[in-house]
Length: 382
Image 1 (spheres, rainbow, N blue to C red):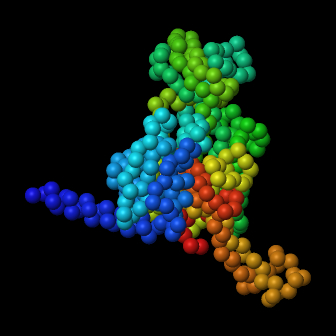
Image 2 (cartoon, rainbow, N blue to C red):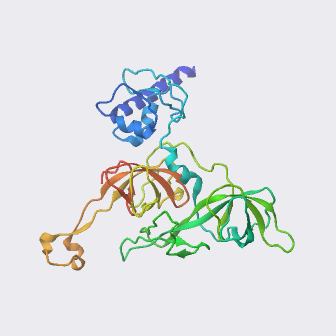
Image 3 (cartoon, rainbow, N blue to C red):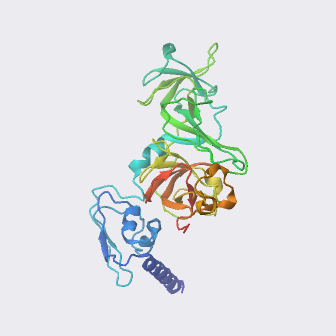
């Protein structure tokens, strides 16, 4: 007796999904689309939906697609919401497409992480033959691994950035770089650094975390023995050179997601709370397919797939009609200024989340994404 009820319920859900899709469709969409090599789910949705981040709507209206991450080049997808066209599978000779191009984020999934502190982490205290740098096949010596046993594997990481948030109640936005030296302490010269740090506004100063960059892996060959207070490891893999002060963490088997379902933030964040902290490989600006670090994480309800829109903060412009052209803007008070609206820049989807920081990929945009931009709901109007 329950089968008819389930059938009616399923039909109702399909109808809701169908008309939800219809409302979001562009007026000139075709009935079907053939998936092409190089497509992403976001790209396909961007061709036919008003809001590309709502691409799951397409798959909800195609219930025969059991897993939207198993769509292959050559598949024919139905976009007709009244007179539906059957989906035809294409050849399975290539890898399935994803919501985002994994090649653009793979290094950030595998090689970057954020921790609350580097104090107390095991670290490299010396290198074979007192070398300045260590490489594949060479021995390194580590402190803080007293219980390590031969055969255990560790990843060698380097603290590169210290992310902080600072109260700016009586000042202005401050952007600076907290580069770290070989001890994990702050200094201002580190030409290996690929990120720019930003201090964002809040109700107080706070450490958001330390960014760790993976260098290589090493295996314990000898534990602590009488008269020797360090553990010996042999560097397994080719990678970046190791130096004294680099940290060690246990090797993890793929501690990250490979599939992403875009969705709006789970909660509304106070204006100014969510900002772009950094842009990978550049100073302050980025664009489509660039990776950015964000000042919010799991504690703020952010998870993988969360989509934000990025906004340039509107200027507090001097009203020259009121004050004239000859007065310095530094001498003009708020009463003679006009707050201009924030300006939309693009969309960002989170692909890796830590407690207080997350990494996102710029999915689209109409102007450059910049360090310090505000993050809002993907459908925010201003």
